[in-house]
Image 1: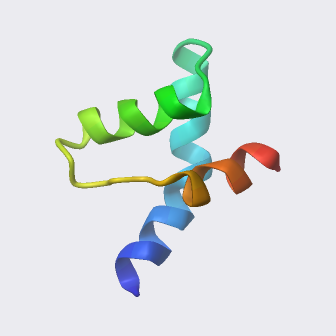
Image 2: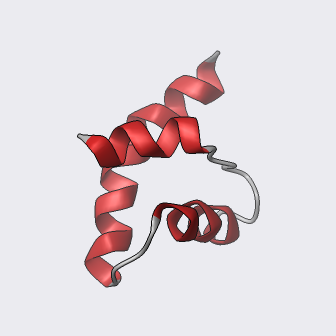
Length: 54
């Protein structure tokens, strides 16, 4: 699925950008991405946490 591949491919740069702004927990990152994209990107823990684990 293209959307899933797109979300996974941008996860690392997006997370790094958000964490550069301030410290956040995983849930906060998911919420921030949802808000900043007006709901277009709806990350789930399965998308985010493998990225954070790396």
